[in-house]
Length: 424
Ligand code: ASP
Ligand code: MG
Picture: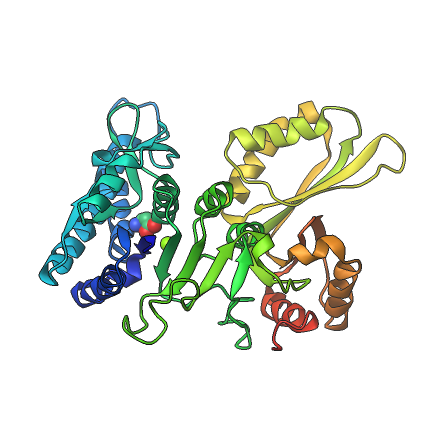
């Protein structure tokens, strides 16, 4: 017997037939004698609709914030998961399974006070462990919890992945299965490179990079949590026949296992190629070369909640001036320019140049730690295709390269093949 947390995303519960299909996946595990808790998202598109409704409301009169009240945003958008948890419990009951829906506050899943993007602070596993003891399948509304102000809080878009992993950690589950509309994590986006392969296993660290870089299968926070609590997490498809052979395999179900790197025996040097479009490049020319300049630039950008990514500073030639280049999401470019204009005088630089329409392509793999020449291989391959590199950043397990967006597909395919990812 094992203890399994099963999470189903929006496309898996998009309509009543699909909810019934999800119930069959749950039944398979229950029939095998496992203790099962389920976490559900809202029906696909539902959260977007709820968010749009909130945004369509007039702002409170006299409010000094240009935004609506985040507590009421949470009250509205958390409702999508309430619906699917109830519907799935009904579907399970119709199959003779003892099932009951639970909202975040009933467990309780305690969060911090950051309404709209709350973090889970604590889950007492004993409530759910008691349900296991009663032979009950708890169907838990994902994406939501209860904040210290005693109000519903939501965990940010995609947050039901994080609910599932946090619950798995709290009840010490043997496995957390994230069911979605793809059958695992791929070496790169199969829509760009049809030769992309499904990875049988990927380490927490690599998955963290892939998720941060735009592989949208998992919310980044859920991967962080899985890494900290060492939750063995599977990404698998709910669209496969629930009763197909191997679907109930305890150790090797079909999908991608996200696990500790020690578990990955045959480590490749490079595991995957990720990309993010809609990056903008900002260059500040003739920046004074003295202490405090970087803080003077990036402090105000951080305060404005602008996510700065690649940062490149030149060594000054004359000891007086240098250039500073960095990237921001294209959607934040105008806001960034306003912030930079304000600090221009105090920090001291000449001009702000910016260009949207960039992409960041990244090579990821923990094997890089012990292999030289991985970056050189990428640069050579891109140069042979005539792709100009605008900026480069590296970490221990990642090389990121900024290029013109028009070359995104070509760069992804080139890198995917040069590291042999389309073989095997
Ligand atoms: N329904 C929420 C969203 O669309 C949470 C989730 O699906 O993970 O963001
Ligand atoms: Mg999701």
